[in-house]
Amino acid sequence: MPVAHPSFLPLLLLLPLLPLLAPPSVHSTLPPPPYLSPATFAADYDDMLGNFRIFVYDAARRTFKFKSEAESLFLASLLGSPFVTENPSEAHLFFVPFDGGLSERSVARVVRDLRADHPYWNRTLGADHFYASCDGIGFGSDRNLLELKKNAVQLSCFPASGGRFVPHKDVALPPAAVAPAGDGGPRAPPPNGTAEHLAYARLGAIKDPGLTDRLAGDRDFLIESEPSDRATIERRLAASEFCLFDLGGDVSWIGDAMRFGCVPVVITDRSIQDLPLIDVLRWQEMAVFVGSAGGAEAVKRALTGLTRERLERMRESCVAASRHFAWNRPPQPLDAFHMVVYQLWLRRHTIRYARRDFS
Image (cartoon, rainbow, N blue to C red; front, top):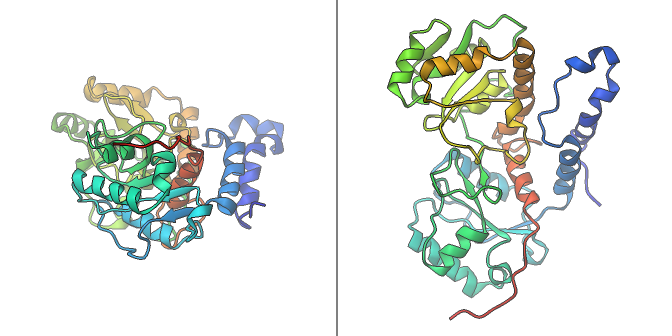
């Protein structure tokens, strides 16, 4: 039987019922839960907590050199979690850890050794395995590398490198920002009409200097270099309705922005299929996506075109979802680590390829 988490399961199970429990007069004012399917998420998350098991190859080594803080936090959290089993026969998935700086030839050698030393890879040709690679693995001619890329789940950094992320199979890690001051919990957005700025951005978040200059010349936008202290950062986020992120710039603070009700504005000219938690959250209810071709005018037009009611719903959804972007030490229920594991849980049903001999 699944083991329910004592503190959070009742709240999760009530999420889809909130509109039914509220008086009729407030039905229209309640923001929708930020989940694609609240009822499914509540049931699946509880099932995951009680049943999911992961076997980690070379777990005794414990330390690996990764390129991102999110990768390091994930491995540290995983090794200390109840999801890890020492019995591979009860594992749903197998984690293949390797240093982030390895060449693709060396990565292929890792897979080759797994194939030779253990029976598990060949059962599915790697379809019940996963690995972490911030930059992603490319498609190579080596059989071992090809199977890893096509079949195993890749944990990537967001945004993923072009052509190295397979939508609906791979998972984007929530960015790991500097740990927030205080308890790190969600913050309620300021009351209507109290924001000082329409939008806020850090210089490193927008790659196009022309766009930065034009936005900086508009008094509705606050564009500045990195504030020197945490308190100033939090004041900026809380005092802004929107926070600007260029998909090619610094997106590490997107979770912080959401925590303070600062709606992310993602500037990009490509479709985005690698959003963190894309299997779980209604991103269209929490973020604005706008192309760069129209310049500063198009960005401002997209923001001012939202109704006040729509904006406030988005801000509340951001705050509600922000707990899922927090990398805690130790991990806490529903945080970034648990949400990555949840997405792996959704991928545990794999195609069992028939055994066959390779030359």
